[in-house]
Length: 336
Ligand code: KG4
Ligand code: ZN
Image (cartoon, rainbow, N blue to C red; front, side, top):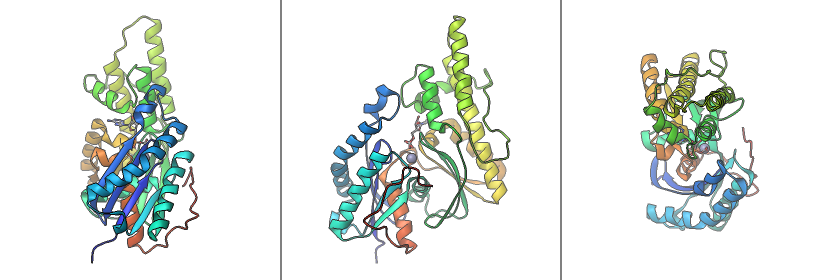
């Protein structure tokens, strides 16, 4: 018969996402974002995000059902982001998921947001060959994962020791007077500039770990901007953007490929909001081709936070016959 219909709910940050999947088949993916409400603060305001989730939850569920052409009664399992993420934001999604699971008498699966970012790739490229290495790069995370099984065996190899990669983009954009979120405008500005014009530091380059650091880079850009302003020079925004971006993607791609080589892994997945970056994509393609690694990058829409990624991971848990979560499922803001 048909694979189970899984509804996934995502509310870890500022996107209210609801997705419906059957196995690796994507049926619908609806996202309501509160990003505009945070723009003037230059970052996500947790209380604002929680309230926006509350308002968007029910309509987003109904849009997702309509788009998929199914009704609530057709849902076989509900999966939800249990963490990591913002406490109040997570609570809204988990409470909604519990209510749907309870009302429908269907199993509830609390899942890890980071692993959802990897699982989503299956909706575009089909079953992920294992083992695989995943590089997750977004406003909240910068992690290298070794994935032997999406539902049961994911090991974190490395993490950022300070800012996330997307956070660095957002902070540098602010220094350059570019809008929030900073990734897209820096990506665009960088195309007009020269990455060789300035040499910014590469955090934790060649240190033998799988960890990252971006706060030194951000400070170096800030110092460069301050010096320029003090000396009355015009800011070469495009060159700064290009040089900053090169420093970020150079380290990300080098460390991801090194992790593959060290673990004898032939498949690399790159996901999260920063995976939309054009230079990250092109340098990763180049370096993976050189190293004989197959690169999988979901389309940008699936890389940013959404409910389909949580449904895709829920489907893996169902397929692996894992026990559902209890209706007392707690959120965990720092879920490992
Ligand atoms: O995954 P995401 O939508 O949300 C979470 O943070 O979980 O990622 C958002 C981050 C922001 O920091 C944004 O600046 C960054 O992804 N981003 C980009 C690009 N598009 C979005 N960073 C670099 N280049 C881009 N084209
Ligand atoms: Zn995310």
